[in-house]
Amino acid sequence: MNRPRISINLAISADSKISSVDHRPANWTSEADFQRLKDLRRGKQALMVGRGTAETDRMTMTVESDGPQPLRCIVSRHGELNVDHPIFETQGGDIHLLATEGYRAHHDHKVQVHGGTLVDYLRTLKEELGVETLHCEGGGQLIRELAELDAIDTIHLTWAAHTLLGGAKSPTLSSVMGEYLASSMEFEISEFQPQTETGECFLTYSRKTAQ
Image 1: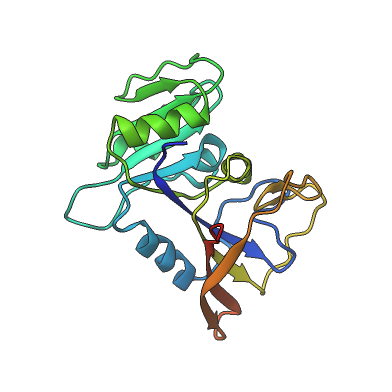
Image 2 (image 1 turned 90 degrees about the vertical axis):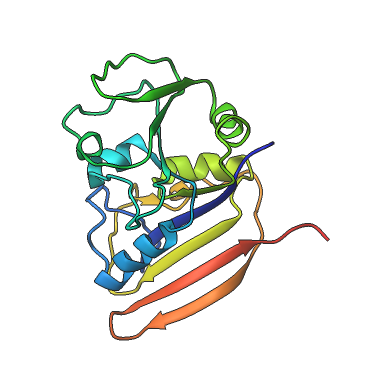
């Protein structure tokens, strides 16, 4: 697949959940983790997120920089996104919306809509929009789809040992606990930064390539 180089960034609780069963907003980690999130966005040509995560976290998908802003890529089934979402009122990169099952929503704002599959979308970002580096910030369902395509090159993870989210159906990094991928993906750890004062640990994993 011709695609950008893709990194993901997520926080997980001590019991390996990325959110509670009711999908609480991502504000349960430290200020240091939030700063890391902002740092990891820098230098990326596009940011991507699933619609549910964009709505829950009210994400504006911008970078603190005077330079060019990354494209803001949202993956949805039918293009639904509340018209009062702050992304429409925030200066940033162009908004590229993927509607995988047909576009039904109508936005009065400037949104470039794409149809087709996630594979088509990634190819368009690379071949037509020149995106070489794409950074995804969830949610679990979108991360799982990327994993099933073997389209994850780097995983940035914050392990938040201070929190247990619980719930058998609470989302994990690969969607829902017990719904395993068809095959394993091998990564090697390339960063390990314990944050003893906050009870968190910053980790980075790089995809292992076949020898």
